[in-house]
Image (tube, rainbow, N blue to C red):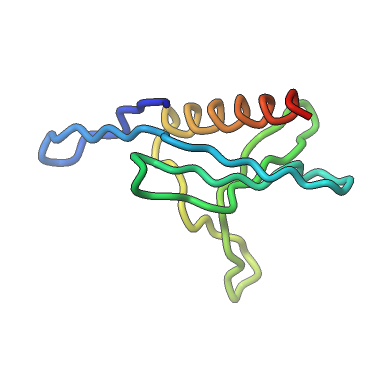
Length: 103
């Protein structure tokens, strides 16, 4: 379980979320996309379709997105600050490596 202090609202209320589950579905075919991930927060909210992509130097995560009428891709859900993005990516990639080690 990973706890993150996400942000402070305008009323100075601190919101904390815990990553309570990460599920990894490996992609068996060759290609840059290695897995699709679902992350659950506080056993109450889940984000599906986070992708693990093989970059030039390292693996990285791509948040779920949809194609706009202008043929651009826009994230559906995403972290709003770099601290949460780093924590989420680190947690996802650690779980992905655990899954790889099990096989």
